[in-house]
Image 1 (cartoon, rainbow, N blue to C red):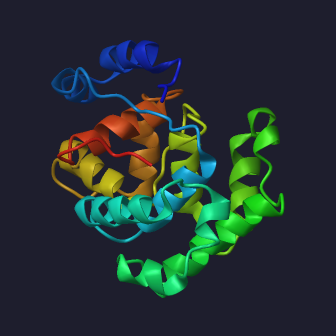
Image 2 (image 1 turned 180 degrees about the vertical axis):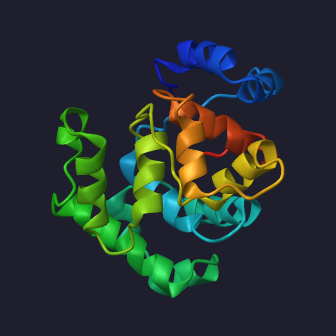
Length: 206
């Protein structure tokens, strides 16, 4: 596992730019965004985590890892769907993950080209697969590709954190948040990660 090359510089940058983020960074001096260098792992874990709590997602993920042994597309496609149901995956999520596994198998997804592609182009490629929406694509850009300036405004955890720290007397609109986020650029990914970290008992990881 590795962390983004820009992480330490981004921490210093955000500490200067935003005193609220600075306090959060100080509170978690040893925690960091990590990369498992397995795109199927990241996408599958993001699907597992959709619309459920971090704790519930972690429990299901642990059971899935135990079932698969190796988290790779070819191993997932060999597992019986009923076994996947038994560990807590919904039929819909089972289907979505199968779509992703098949997309890697038939080269619909092109990992060898991602380093040369813009964020939006990668997100578009991912969202062509049934089951991958904007949120999942954004999680992939953050956790697997370590793109530095991702602000996932479809993420409820991020919105909750922003309103907790910055919404003093009102719920912030999307326009308010976009204006606020200008002080985090070009490291919105790092600001997002620390805002998540401030809400959860363990670091968010996909």
